[in-house]
Length: 143
Image (cartoon, rainbow, N blue to C red; front, side, top):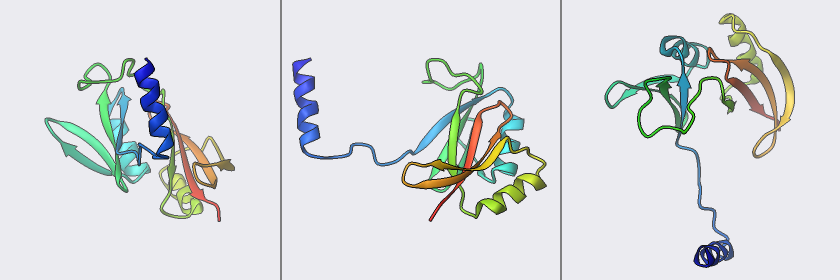
């Protein structure tokens, strides 16, 4: 334990940040077809297939890998359950366009637009739920 603490203290002294960005996350769902429709049609992410029957949703330089409950790929989270995520996405278009698109898709907004505190600055957000009831926040940066 003493060696680990010393290594941690040395790491802090160098004033380095070990993590740079998020590459991907894994979403566990109950219905791959409904989830794919939501993330491609409503969220406008690009469908990507890889490996042996794997599915992902690409946006920017990140992606969401899809697991279906009961058929997860290994290794997996300790308790992979649908509906447990709360995610915030920064839109590439003004939030008013997002709101119009959600309306055109007949996808209900459950809250917003509201002001929130984002990772780097204030954001303006709307909230929706995906087919597994994950909370999805879609935001624009506020100048």
